[in-house]
Length: 263
Image 1 (spheres, rainbow, N blue to C red):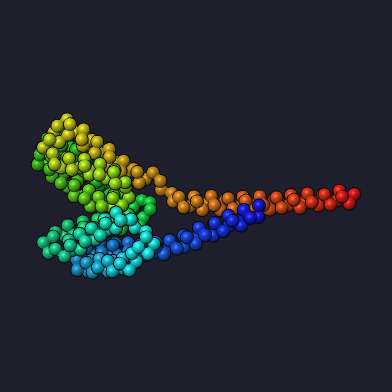
Image 2 (cartoon, rainbow, N blue to C red):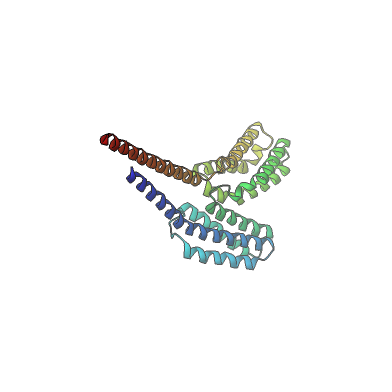
């Protein structure tokens, strides 16, 4: 019994040592997250040169920190690299509109946050604007007015393009590919979708997928590690109390046995 208690305590202590080791990686990612946010805020204020400098600092910091704990997957690294490069390119491009620069920095910001955040990443806050924009697409399609439909669809595609890279961090590849395929269809066959019965079904199916995409990130808001700690702590307490009770019972039994023997 004593051996079980010792083993369980050792496991518990090792788990906390592992968490302390992981905390260093979390702190590094938190710093990178702050840099991505700083670059975005500077871009919003029209300080593009300063925003670019922060992104360059991000790149240098990331290179020093990268893969210390082999934390990032190759897919995450690829998405992070692409969005970073696109943000730098947009900030450098003289002909790029301010909105284009901000969108590129926003996309990068959302990717970094998605990598760091385990629950409720920032891109989920885009549900309102994205779904509202898609509602306008459906309304325009129902009227059959091509010009209005194209205008509303372009706006939706622009908003989706901002969050799409961060979706690749948090969601299965198959789900993203399926969603991208449906979006590519309504984009390519605009005339067929607008004002037709089959097009209405395609749009409704896409709306369902979009809703499920955001809902999937709301299903589990609790950190499983907290449950693990609670269960582990409870198990140790129960096992310790059981051991103390067993020792007490054994001591009382031996005491009675000695008393009976003396009698």
